[in-house]
Amino acid sequence: MLTTTDLQTLEAQGHKWLSRKHRALPRMEREDILQDSLITLVRKVERRPVENPGGLLGRIIDDRVIDYVRKDVRKNAVEQPTADMSAVSPATMPTYDDLIFALTLDQTVRAMPQPLRQAFILMDIRGLTSHEASTLLDTPASTLRNWRDEARNVLRKELQ
Image (tube, rainbow, N blue to C red; front, top):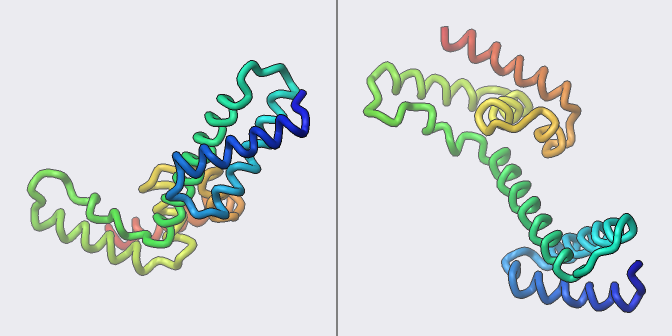
């Protein structure tokens, strides 16, 4: 069991860890990550004793930072949905038909309503599961699956 003094010491260690290793993160995000990491550490210590709580806290913080960065990247992917549409063409020298297909696909995706476009890009292009996308967009997973299916239908009609 951790005492209040232990927690204060660990919190100071966490501040140093974040300031030294993850100083590129916004200050408020670092604070949120630290508090979340401390809560996780306390829960783990309650279940079973830990020999090196400071080391465990460092690993938890690193995991939380990685999660934050991944969420930030995914959020930017939603805000800039057509950034990777150039990847639709094959890596080899594209034919004229390939270029027309890629252009039509890009225009069709851009013309979709935002919910359909987001669901399609996150789940079919980015490869997220419906549950990951629902967490990211704060929308039920079943709704996102319906939007993705609707987007596929729009593409199917346009590209035939």
